[in-house]
Amino acid sequence: AMGLLKGMDPILSADLLHVLRSMGHGDKLCVCDCNFPAKEVATHTTSGKLVELIGVDLPRALDAICSVLPLDFFVETPAQHMAAQMGVSMPELGHEVIADAQNALTRHCGSDAAILLKPLERFSFYAEARTCFAVVQTMERRPYGNVILVKGVVGPDGKDLRPVS
Image 1 (cartoon, rainbow, N blue to C red):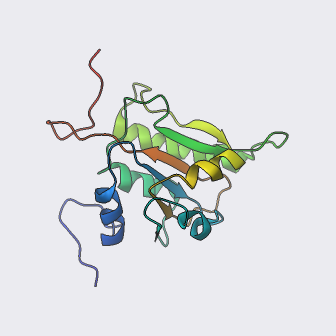
Image 2: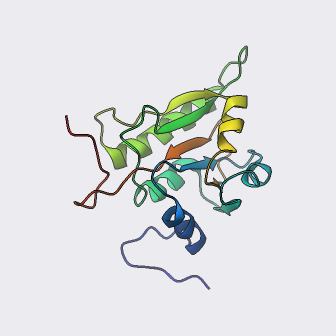
């Protein structure tokens, strides 16, 4: 059964909401494309969970996830994307999906450049993904459509807690 909730993005399934609510401050979430070895990587994560979002691309998934998941403004790298390995050029569609993912993060975190997707070489990304809390697989077909987000803290105002300048 799948019921909708008011004010909540409909792609936030019960399984996905359970994963997001179960994560603690500093836990990481891998949101990946349809070619990522999600099942294998998920077996190594803290929860061992894989949530599949059928018919959803990466930017749409990030829009939904970031509408409820606070990001960590207290760490140097709260958001990373998969980059090509040494000696391989990033294809144009890879640049496009990363730009679209960055736009989704900016919509939810502001344009003050506090949350910028930073590149992580492909094989290092796989290793980092295995240290995540869980994996969310999208149907993103553009290459390199993979990100890792670090969960932050919801402040007393209900928004992402940020350092005081």
